[in-house]
Image (cartoon, rainbow, N blue to C red):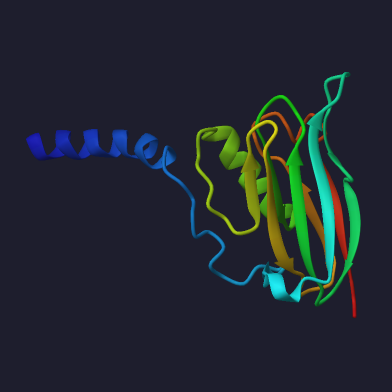
Length: 159
């Protein structure tokens, strides 16, 4: 009886303990959108600003861009807003899965190579090699930000 009660107690407590952790290493596998690039291979820099607007929207500027398959791009990302934002690059379905997880566990920590979270006024960069042609997304997955407009489109054209 004691073992059964202990088992139920452990099972009941396990999800919150896991939820407060991180999902680092989620992208050890090859991603459809590509993989981390080498700074020496960068052929172009794209500057992206994350911010809130006076009318309550949250945006990336620019929110749409085109790259070529095989291109290595340096994204320099600045949070010009007044609250924390993140930049996540991935497939639409993966973005939506990640969004749902973030809504359920908003304090989840990130250490993904395709994402960066920045405090107000801070800057960072991601160097990325686009290996496959197709349509991809950028998004801020802090709860509520995507729904307030903070997402965009990446088109990767064939070589």
